[in-house]
Length: 229
Image 1 (cartoon, rainbow, N blue to C red):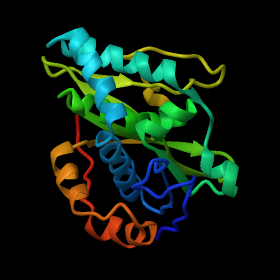
Image 2 (cartoon, rainbow, N blue to C red):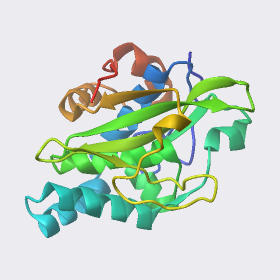
Image 3 (cartoon, rainbow, N blue to C red):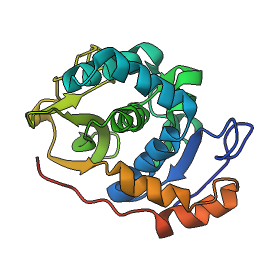
Image 4 (cartoon, helix red, strand yellow):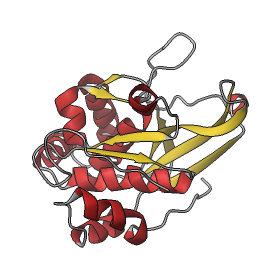
């Protein structure tokens, strides 16, 4: 199901361990890898300091926390397209950057942005999710779940879309609350991030060996289920 390869100078547990490179065939598996990147990223002091800074600035105001997190990621990282297509020529490959790697490179695509959103929002106690949408892919002549963006839940229960990638056709940058028009995609699937479950899982995974990670991630990682909102 997945092909693994090592990126950078270290493995996932080392100082340069900030990319998970996979080839996945199901939407659920890709979301699991996205949440794995979110959870690994949440263990790093870089993410903790960023989340603490926003929380101190905003206090208990959840909407402020969401806005500041969105602004921070927009400022930190520019959209660099689909890395899988770039280095493998294959749309089935995904690269999931942790927050630390996003901060260091200043680059992200839709799944990297969403992973870091979940990292920072969860550290601040804000419920968050990944929303995947199924769009027509003219290059392959079929519908595919080919885009993902974040969701946050405010105190009153309102769900706020968080689209960080430039919007086609003119690469417009949008703010919190904007969402891809419903008539441009066929289906959507929302996956809410249960950070506590994922944190318990990652504590039992040996992150020091890429080989071990390759065999353990899907066999032991928490399952994910699409939820209605």
